[in-house]
Length: 225
Image 1 (tube, rainbow, N blue to C red):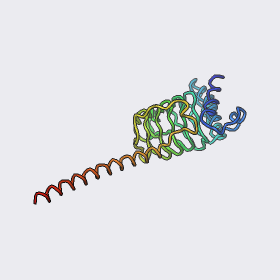
Image 2: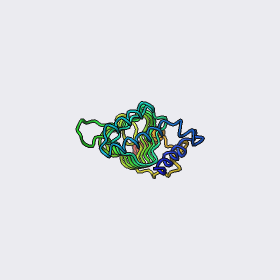
Image 3: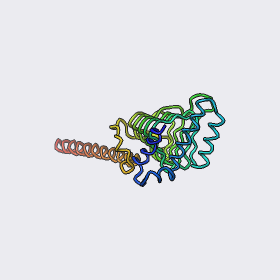
Image 4: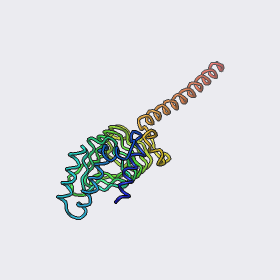
């Protein structure tokens, strides 16, 4: 238990340069408090004490503004930055070293009593306001841009942006733990724009080649006359 608490605290220091001391992190980080409330509520939920689990979860929501269902499964090293408005559903599963920003929803699109919330792989970063809805997987090392709405499978090491979410970059090299530091977090929007510019440059190259070919053909025809 103590080792898990230390991992939760270290996740804050790893990914937030504003964190200055252990007392500050322990007493002033609602994202950390929400995770600790969830540890307790999940303990009761797994043992069949559903009412107590929901009650503890409700207290956590009241004090932090973050709603995590006690049935959700959360790995080690989760970091919820700012956190207000984050919602994590009952059958959601979150891997290790995941980063969530404020306003993120891991929700469902069905009323069936089955797996209806997403499974988030290790080292995933989900930007503020993003909605991940449905019982599919977000592959490890992926990044989801702010305010995106994702409703289908995301391959590993991909960047997803937009409504509905579209994969704009895929099969990137997985980033290391140091890349998760706050100053080195990937910017999905910037990468998407960079991808678009690269496509524009490719179109320009093709246009230049076609123009040159057209001029050459035109000169040949003129010379033939």
